[in-house]
Amino acid sequence: MSSSPSASPSPSPALSVRGSRLALIVVGLCWLGVLFDGLDMFIYGSVLPHLLETKTFGLTADQAGDLGSYATFGMLVGALTAGTIADRIGRKKLMVACVTLFSLASGICAISSSLEVFGLGRTLAGVGLGGLLPTAISMVSDYAPRGRTAITIGMLMTAHHAGGILSAYVAKWLVDPVGWRAAFWVCVVPLVFAPVLAKFLPESLSFMVAKGRTEEARELATRYDVELPAAAGKKTAADRWDALVGLFRGGEWIQTLLYWLASFGGLLLVYGVATWLPTLMRAEGYELANALTFVVVFNLGGIVGMLVAGRAADRFGAPRISAIWFALTAVGVFLLGVHMAQAVTMLVVFLTGVFLNSAQTMIYATVSIRSTPDNRATAVGWTSGMGRFGAVFGPWLGGQLLAAGNGDWGFTAFALAGVSSMVFIGIAALRSAKSDTPSGSERKLVTAH
Image (cartoon, rainbow, N blue to C red; front, side, top):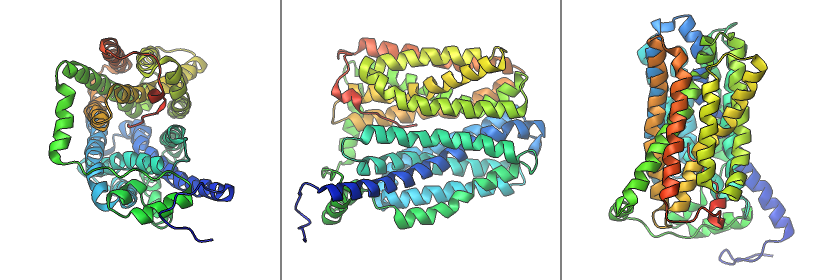
């Protein structure tokens, strides 16, 4: 009953069932990691109305915007360095390190006695948050059941919005009776999850193959009933530079800049709204409890959006869906600045959540589709990286508007960012020489916040 590690027999039904169960464990652990990532990311926005109303640390609106940008700047650093670090220590160890880092950083926020210490905690948390998400996506891609990679990644991303929902309830249940510090102490709890990851999460198959641990990787792939990643040739610095330069050769520089500008506006919108939604809704006259309920509804919409965006792109094409989604997002965000009946506002918040997050996802899908295989990773990575500057700018912009007494313009400013992304991705799609007809390559969901 022994089998050679180098053999590749068709898995038996029993092995397939067992492999699927083991793969479910891997995906489940990554899902929990991303859940905690979302909790830590959204918790600041959820407690921000309380921090401003109580003038904690003498906090002003413009300083609050700066604090929101600290976390997103940390995420930029984490996202840009995650790949290099993972290539050295492995994806599993990096995930454990990221969970540990953002949990301890929340502890710094919880015990902080000054705005500077609190800002340090949010920056360090951002580094861990930015490093975990792309690493978790890589892990899930390795262990997803055969032919189910795209939908598995989509399911993984629902965890981020589930974390946003959890952050709203943590704030509703703890901030008024106990205080804002209790909310950040809850964000330290994932620290106990780090040893669970270290014990039960297997190493990335791609990492083991890249490090020459082929036999070990093959044994895991057989046991989990997943495909063994192909060994890729080691890329030199010159290869990576050539791939980047290729994005600007000929007329490609126009396409590249259009994608980058669309991503900038998209992530400005995503993180600006994530940070300021409860505060802006308070400014519109809603009670704090209702303002936090909007966070729950917004993230419920995000979960639905992640599950339906890929199917819509399969049928109508990712570039078209991205442009339409941004247009609908802009309308929804603008309407949030109009005081309507609460039930109508809830519906608008939900639909805005549906379209907002998946609109940005479709930018990555569009770039992936329009790129050649040899520079696809570079194109998507740099589009995401340039977009993260928008993620830094969005929270700052909201703070500046509120500090200047122009809070009513907050939703309008974010809506204009959605319009700009719609225009840029629309022009890029029209300029492309390739057909917009959906193809098999468009069915691969690309997700990278």
